[in-house]
Amino acid sequence: MSHQQADAIDVEAIREEFPILQREFDGQQVVYLDNAATTQTPDPVVDAMSDYYRESNANVHRGIHHLSQEASEAYEVAHDRVAEFINADGREEIIFTKNTTEGENLLAYSWGLAELGPEDTVVLTEMEHHASLVTWQQIAKRTGASVEYIRVDETGRLDMDHAAELIDDDTAIVSAVHVSNTLGTVNPVSELTDLAHEHGALSFIDGAQAVPNRPVDVTEIDADFYAFSGHKMAGPTGIGVLYGKQNLLEDLNPYLYGGGMIRKVTFEDSTWGELPWKFEPGTPPIAEAVGLHAAVDWLEAIGMDRIETHEEELAAYAYDRLEAEEDVEIYGPEGGPDRGGLVSFNLEGVHAHDLTSIMNDHTIAVRAGDHCTQPLHDKLGVPASTRASFYVYNTRDEVDKLVAALDDARQLFA
Ligand code: C6P
Image (cartoon, rainbow, N blue to C red; front, side):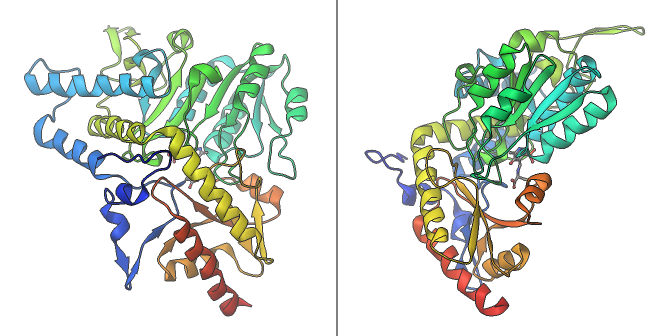
């Protein structure tokens, strides 16, 4: 099916590929605005995975029978497809993980534990997700390294003067989120990477909220490492990606050990196999890799530029509608190129959990809580916020329903 009109996305055609969006609870159709947590999965991705199980299922890299060869081929080619999607040099640079969190841990354990010491600094941002913040904190504790945070200013953007002050010759790595899952801010990750490289440091970019929603070119960003999750980009759960520059990955030791990743094992010692397999021990997520491949095909058939524009417009519309409500406080930059497809906010006098529960009475799915950014919420001075996050199948009409439901909350809690 063609999803493209002249320039805009044909949302109605896209929605037909998501039966889940037709579901109703209490006679009301689902309004799914929790896409930053996980996106829905279109039929072609579900079909690719069920076809795999029906026709090709076997373990990979272990058998010389037909089915194992077919499964191995599908698994390997999925790496090539992802490499092409983010403009990496090849499959050697694409490690399949469980999710973004595992990608961050893989790097922190294999590189951080080996390389960091008391003289080193890890530079994060105040808007990091716990996946990187907690991981680097723990690795810093074990290595004696210190952790510093680039300030978020009152507009919800990074204070780049502060970044230039913090990143110095003691910096070992700069670890920054590409698009904040709470503020929606799109960070200048190339600039941060340049700053890191000027001081001989590495850069790691958390792309969990970027790769699903906009064209990402890791070569252009020049990131040394970059991670994201399949389940936030129309793909399945259980698979994520850690990209790394080949020369860096070659020098890195694995963090998980086992079968499928070795070259030679004796009773005394072991040596590692080729990239990327040396970082993928054990039976990997094979059907999920097939699903991720299908998701990338599906996204590219729509066009990542169009997806970015669609989400930017929806977020700007939601921002404007919510800003017009006097008792709503919104976090992060105004709608525009600095904001990805999500808006976090609070309604005066109503706890985010209560508001989200009222939204659920209207079958509107939004997320309440700290969104795994507790220190950022502390800085914002609120324990929690309500977040609406958009994807390629959402509409302005759904934003209108969200705004209309605020009245119920006011009536109940005012
Ligand atoms: N954020 C959200 O609702 P995993 O869970 O490993 O696939 O992704 C972790 C992660 C890392 N970085 C960022 C910026 C993220 O947004 C997330 C996941 C979800 O915002 C769950 S907390």
